[in-house]
Length: 113
Length: 111
Image 1 (tube, each protein chain N blue to C red):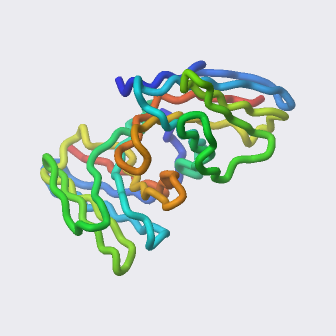
Image 2 (cartoon, rainbow over the protein chains, first blue to last red):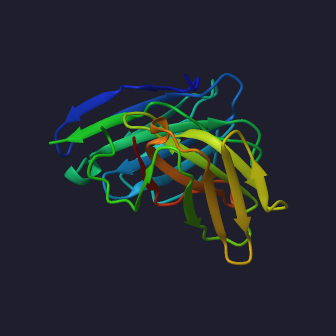
């Protein structure tokens, strides 16, 4: 158990809909990262938050947004969903910037029909 | 599992043999690198890390080699076991504060 909690574990929805994925980092970790893992693209970095502030942004679509709350949990919002958004979405947390490994949650599997 | 159908480079080895998994990274300014193991249905898990001021680091049955000249990382697994079967990713800590992952390699260990 990595200590990172993601909900929901599975989600099935229709095109055009909006979903919110939630992540609770390990106790004490200030950084939260979001990654997308599709069948043919490995782990794609989406966004990184550190202590409530956006730190770095990767290939995140404009239809997607994220935030980190004062209690350090994070949410990834996916809107106007398309079939191609079906993927595993991982959250990871870490301690001080650039000093250690990422601890990954078990992922949220999103299926868009 | 979640990785079924993933079009990754693959490496197949016999149980007991040594495995070498290679990775090219993108940014010469990256200063920290990690190898992760992802088993089917699970999130990636840390194996070993190395900082850019080192060229070799050893763990239990694993060794990471870093060649900054050609921006290359390798992971060596000694006496590979069936439980080592997984997808292996290298990751680099980018200067701007994110961890970027390589494409991954699927390791299959034959008993």
